[in-house]
Amino acid sequence: MKYKYIYFLMLLICLNSFSQNNEFRSYIGNEKNKFISSEKSNSAYNSGIDFINNSDYNNAVKQFTITIEDDKKQNYLSTDAYLARASAYIQLNLLKNAILDYSVIIENEKDSNYLILAYIGRGGVYGYLNDAKKGIDDFKNALILSPNDVDAIYNLSRLYIQQKNNIKGLDALCLAEKQYYLQKLNNPLIISSILYMKGVAKYSLSYNDYCKDFNSSLKYKTYLVKEQIDFIRKACGN
Image 1 (cartoon, helix red, strand yellow):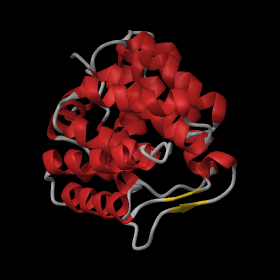
Image 2: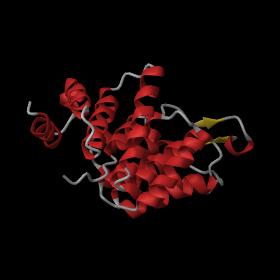
Image 3: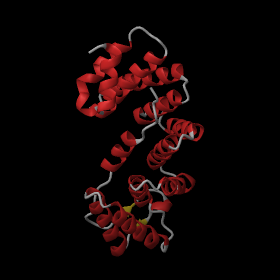
Image 4: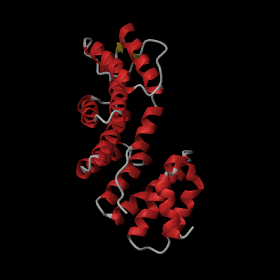
């Protein structure tokens, strides 16, 4: 069975992090962030979020571009708009454009929280494009900034498995599972994905206990796709 890298877990998490601005975006903290957005910029950003929520990604891109270009006039890096536009580009399968937006953030942003999102986002796209080396580098950079980030650890494991390095992949999945429970996270999509991929790694390594992880993932089967469920039933005789 071929296991193609899928970045949609990361994408869903990133999209859920976007929200509207009901007031002008006022950034305080370091010198770079002493900025208040214009009404035009703020309105376009909010419209872009509305378009994303309605799955109108072409118009979302147009609105986020207005925000980015208007903020540039004040020498401000619109990181939130770049992240949102990258996610819209992914939905439109304009993956090179998404890479460019993530790269702008990585090359110019200083806030580690934004950098982590950009590294995970770009790493996911690289993985989907079968450029595992660049994807692995991005996830490792995210983990330098946040060593226990479950998303980064999980996505890194997927790329190891994509490269058929199942032992490294399994080690990363075990760490992701451990951190998931230590951090008391509550996201069935994440834990079902971790458990399923643990089963995949063990199955590929001919370990005897792969059905334990597969069956554990079935507790969250509404978060698994039909192909995954069918494979579990075939492998474990369920």
